Length: 255
Image 1 (spheres, rainbow, N blue to C red):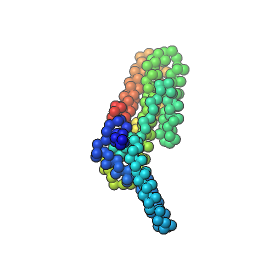
Image 2 (tube, helix red, strand yellow; image 1 turned 135 degrees about the vertical axis):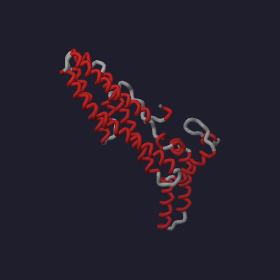
Image 3 (spheres, rainbow, N blue to C red; image 1 turned 120 degrees about the horizontal axis):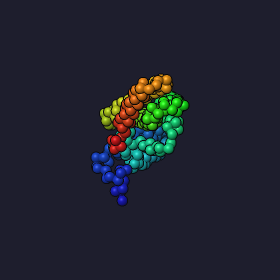
Image 4 (cartoon, rainbow, N blue to C red; image 1 turned 60 degrees about the horizontal axis):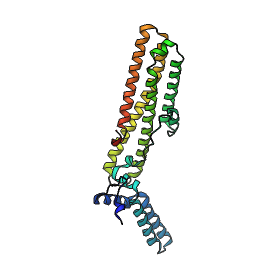
């Protein structure tokens, strides 16, 4: 009857060592220990005998429930970042502007929204240009759209990594698995720094690219073709960088 309690979220049976790790983590969970602390303080102040057994029973119950919580097990066995709920896959028909509004308020969202505004103005400049300019920059439009889609992807993953860092820092009060969590924390911090650098770089590149679109519109003949080819090559490079970063920010099973 107890066998189902030994399975993880994937249906795999936990080993004895994994079960010991989960139970030990449940005993040492800060919120669970807080119950013991509160019960001890209450007993010291009120001096009522039933406070001690009530505290022990409550503590044992929440430890029992925590050890059988699938999310808590995954947090202990696989790390906080893996245990966090994965962001739902965004539908292709959801525009990046709307997805950007789903980001937490802060510097990352501001930069992404500023980049989207530059993207909008750049697309408008291309569409309002003459037939010749639209023809030479025709390949640039889908590449521009791809850049902002991937930029929002990176921003979403950056915010998830930042949330995982906050959770890990809260959980580092105990000495158990501190070294493992320290390594995981360092990896998440590297992800956040890389995402911040790429988001800022993409914003600057889009800003420069808009000015170059304007310059293409005043060129003619071979000069316009050359400028458009260089612009398309730079867009390809931006997309390659964003795609590579987006891939490295994904969990191993999604890469």
